Length: 74
Length: 190
Image (cartoon, rainbow over all chains, first blue to last red):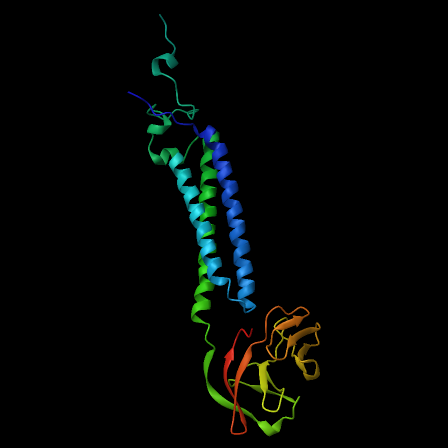
């Protein structure tokens, strides 16, 4: 019987920490995007609203993908 | 020959500082036991993982906010449909003259300015910075907020200088039969 080699949780900690750093960076980017879009929208500039929404969606997709990978590790 | 317990059981999973009651390795344990570990190192791992999950939820909330702005932008672009209302006669104001009015009834004060023989503009009189009343400076082609020295363009309502960042809401006008009618309000005059 072959047993699949797997990392123990202590070995996976650096991966989780790296993920955490990525996810936090992306969320900060999203927060900046939201405030910048809101500022532009209230100032009457609506050209950035839709691209910013899809940009934010892409960031969410990236975050969700990282989370999915993290849960797959366990 | 005496064998150690380790040799009998085989190599133990390194995640196991504390052995579960059934003695099986962590990978074979049910999910609830893996998610509520006893050992400090494992607890740290799970809490860090749950933090990532929470931050991804925050990311989802920010995306919802972003789409809410897009939704508002799509469905609120049209100026408010209001009934037309006569607010002044053309002869009432000389070129460069101004008067205040409310439109619709009970609104914040609006400012009507005659900028040419047949040209009128009207805006909300409240400055978009801290709601001080703006005054027309027709000779400069501007509206001035004296409270914090803010300036707006008289023809478009856009902020030009000082603390205001947003344009003055614009009242849509129609001139016919020697009368000036207000026909709607445009919240973002650009």
